[in-house]
Amino acid sequence: MNSANESVILRNLAKMIKIMGIITALELMKMSVDYESLYDELKKSNDNVEQCAVLEENGTLINSSSGWDLSEDGKQLIETWLAHGPRIVIQEIGFSVLRSEPEQFIARNVSGKGAIVGSITKSGNYLVVKLSPSSAERMGRDFIDVARYAAKM
Figure (cartoon, rainbow, N blue to C red):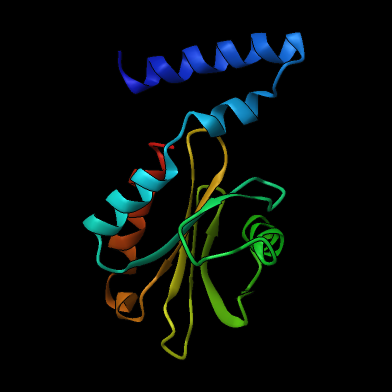
């Protein structure tokens, strides 16, 4: 069975379970994703990836790689992304927003402290990735890698 079929089956199952009042559809989708394995794959495939996190549309942290806690900054990050804001501060580091579209987010620290890129997951959440300072020359390619992994979530 391919992942598209699995996703449809999971969504239908989630709807049935939600109707029965046992668990919400979103909670079921969260349980079905092995975030840690996907984070590890992404980090192995791209040396510029330092940290990963998945946020809900309201900014609530669903999951993150070790050491990167976006629970304080998640709401502001998603609000900036969706409102096409010019600047974001994450863990006391400022980033200038270079691109902010519904399906993608790219921001860079002008002092050379890295970049933040984001993409929508197939379940409608937001994959956010912290890139290393050396990513400045290839942020576009790094974003493509992130978008490819977001499509798996």
